[in-house]
Length: 97
Image 1 (cartoon, rainbow, N blue to C red):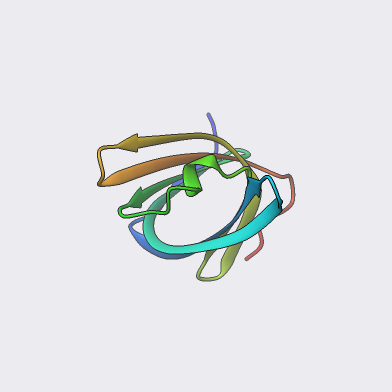
Image 2: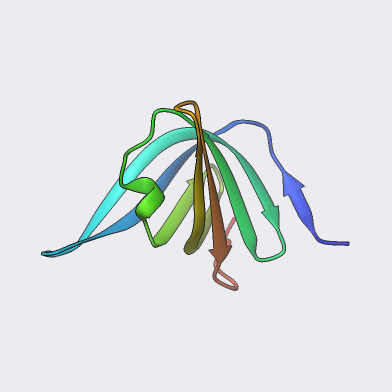
């Protein structure tokens, strides 16, 4: 049975990197999201709106109240303009809180 923890809607800050022709841009987005942690994976269901660059990010840090998660964005799916689902592979030992 996998270790899974789902949370109610929470305020969080997502720091992420966007690759450009001139280098990497560090960006940030504050939002509300449902957060689910299962094994070494993190899922964020974000309510819109969100930046166009966010689904194309590769390295992601999610700051939620007393916890910080860091990992690589594996998949991003938009459900209309109201919801974005981000699946993040967590780097081992990076969840702090």
